[in-house]
Each structure stands twice: as structure tokens, then as C-alpha cells.
Image 1 (tube, rainbow, N blue to C red):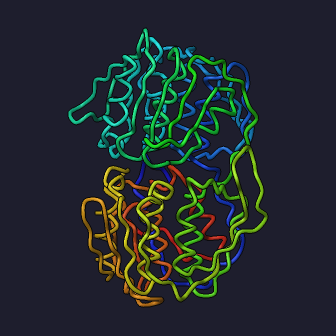
Image 2 (cartoon, rainbow, N blue to C red; image 1 turned 90 degrees about the vertical axis):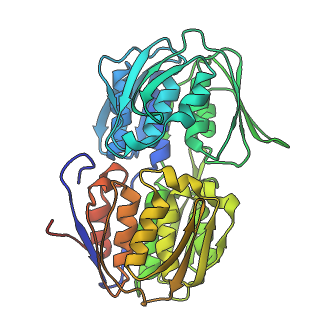
Image 3 (cartoon, rainbow, N blue to C red; image 1 turned 120 degrees about the horizontal axis):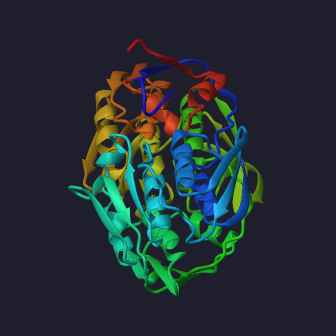
Length: 450
């Protein structure tokens, strides 16, 4: 499958129980940051378990364009010979970040305080997404940005020749914005301070500290305050990437919905800023258990077992949990369709500006499949029909969004009639082995005639 190429329709239908182990790819957030921080270090960073989806590979190509040496040694095994903080060279070509909002925003931050200029573009989905949420705080360092109307790609970033440190309060919870500001702060003198009113995924803080930056995190009345000392010499690392909880969400949720299923997902990252979905599913009555809890590279990991759960109940998801599961709301809404009662999701405005408007995309597809959905600007409510009672029998639009495509394929595994996704090719951006992995578990997902 290719997120940049031919349309790939897929159809999911009811079949037998899902059984076995689901070896999902490496964590996407950690994979992006491993490549970028490796490129900003002096020496060789070695990475095991790197996610080899298109989003991450595009970030690797970008690091090469900025002067780092990025080498693949085998499946998931990579090395990065970095150029050091402030060592980025000016790229000779436009940087194509494909479908990756995380990639482009983090890379913009990483180069924003070096005296170089770079132009960024992406696919149709990425080029429609607003970049002002990142370029506005980067401007405080002295960076300039020139893009299309509405702050959209293609966009040229002119790095600050004489950057100044900043103190910035993130207006809405966003790990991408926080991380971009912290990466920009690496090459600014003095201390850069980022304040979050609500905690978001903290991989950047953990990894910056692991690479030798001085990072202090405090919880104060104004929020979660992260202070970074600028202009460190980052030390290369050996990194083992945990498996991605956002990818694990799909086989896990499928197992909950398909009768007789029992699926084990080994070595899943359980960083508390990422594990909100699993907490929510357990509250809904899901049969989920953690086994073999341990740590890898400062990140908590465990094996996660998911079994068929026919008596799921709708709940109100605490709005403060949104940041820890923002990418998982689409597949949660699928689970909610098979629960009894209402599942209420609030404080999720961020979903409107992802690869697609994910609230609108899921609401339209679920309604077409026979599920009642109410929505507002930053909330939506799915009224579940209970186990086995969702009609299905529809073709839905993926809107160039990998998580929308996978969510509706999970839906089709448990609906009365099959569900077809018009284009599943974007799945390759984050979960290139989705199709083969689900097949090994016994899922009835097939390519359709376009």
C-alpha cells in the first residue's frame, strides 16, 4: 500500500475469531524523535525497532537532506550519524513530509533556530492542514515563515540567525507544538520554557533528557512547566523503540468486537501520556489485561491481552484524558457503536484538524452504517447498538487518513454486512503491515475491486 500512489479499496466482513499474537510496528512518535535527535547529536545513534512506515521514512530522508547520515542495516535497524545542535546544512531540495503532521512540525522546530532556509511540502492531506500553531511560536525565536493562505504548505521557513529563548504557553493541548518549540530551543541561548495547561505525550522531554539535554519538568499553578537549557551537546544513544500503542489500538479493538477472539499484543508502550484508550476501554467493560510489565529506554511497556467483550457499556470519557488518546478516538467510536448506551467524547476539537476532520469523517461513516452520532465543534456522542446489532453494508471515505481507514475496517469485522473503505492506501503511512498482520489473526479483510 502506498499513501502517495494508487487507490486501494478494502472490504472487511464478519468471519471467525481473531487469535494469536499481533506484533505491531514500533512507536511512531518515538521513531520520529529518534531520527531527529540522532541527527542533532554528535556521533552515531543506533535504533532498533524503528517504524518503517512512510511518515517516518520521510523524516529520515529529511534528516539526510539537512546533512545527517541515515543508514538502514536491516528490518527496523537504523543508524544516524548526527551533525550536532546548530549543525544542520541548508537542504538543496524541497522537503516532502508526505502525510506526516508530526514529521513536518517537529522538523520545522529542529531547523527554526539555525541560519538556513528550507521549503516544506506534503501530500494533499498535509498541504491542507494549518501550520500556524507551530510557526506562530517559532516566530518568537526570530524565525520567519512564508506559506499559502491560512498558513498552509508548501511553506518556506527562514531560520533565525540570532535566535532568542522564549517562554511559551501552548494554547491548546498539542505534543507537536510543544515538541517543535523545545527542539527550536535547543539552538537558542539561555532557557526556553514551554507551559502546558494539560499534559500531552512526553516523549520529547524523556528523549531530550536521554540524549543529554538539561530538561526540568515542574507542576506549578500555571500548569506543567518544561524548562530546557539551550545549546547543549547532545550525546548519541542506542534506542529500542517500543511498539506503538496507537497501532495496537486496531487489533485490540477488533478482538473486543469479534466473537471468540483472544489476541496478545507484545511489548506495547504504556507511557501514561499515551495509554488513555486502554484505560477507557477497561472502564467500558473490555476484557483487557497487562502482562510482563517492564521498562525499555525509560518507557513503561507490557504485553497486552484483549479478549472478546460482548457486554460493553457506553461511558463519558473525561475531557482531561483527550490528550493521552487523541489519535484513538476514531477507533473508540467504533467500539462505542457496539456498546450499550451513549459514549460521550468531549474536549476533542483537535480531531477537526488532523489528517482529516476526524469527527466529521467518523460521524458520517457511522451514520451510514446505521449508528446514531451527535456532534459539536469539540464533542461527539455515539449511541451504541450493542453487540452484533450494527447493520453496516456501506462504502465509506478514508479521506487520505490512515486512522479513518483502519477504524472502518475494524467496524466491518463485526457489522451484519461488510464495510468497504474507498481507499486504504494511507494506512502505509503509519502501519505498513496492517493488512498482513490482521490476516495472520484471521481477520476477513480483503482488497476490493476499485
